[in-house]
Length: 276
Image (cartoon, rainbow, N blue to C red; front, side):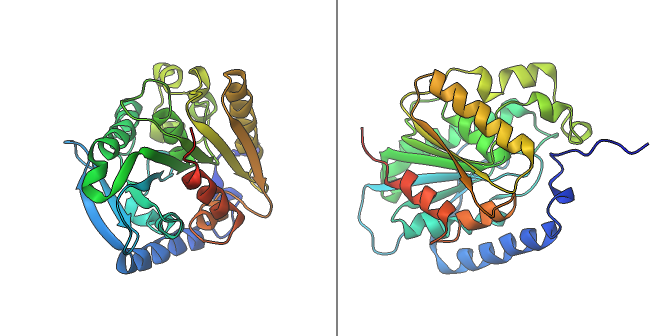
């Protein structure tokens, strides 16, 4: 008897999955070599609590700061694999902070969430040391990184304000993941599902949200985005959902780091959001 397809298993729906992973790494290697940077800056005392800062050339003080959180279903990849997203961020005149976090299952979800919140707090507290403005902090994340970005933007998450957030192909309710092919790796507990699903928390009306999903992604990613959009609007948050034509789960993040694409323009909008 054939098992039911798991719509969260990206490899089954992106035929050239490994080609995209290789391109992420190739593009990132070029970014690391070409952009002005401060790499492996510790934002906390724990293992793996580091971020890379990419800085516009010849820019003055008080620049916007944008933090990007990578995906990988919380158990794969690193900041070095996604440095290329800094191309769009720096091109928009902002400081890019590409953040690392511990990976599951060795670390539990509570650690990952605390780390991204700690990274936001560090960026706010140390902004002037690298030419940034703590009052112009924005964030984005892809897939599991979209989930962690949503958790970083929760009310009361820290002594910082995220003005705008771009959540790309994010995951906002963890219960389906606990029933997916990932569960033997992640070992999500009922407590973790309850404590770390953004859909189960109040929305933050101090943050503007753009949710983006590729038109060619599998149905669960559309459902998650639509459910979170409704939730945010019920919470009186400024939120919109954008479906990007021709994009799937891997191409959409490559487009995020490619200036001139529709996805990159969404990121530029978020960075430019300094009102209020």
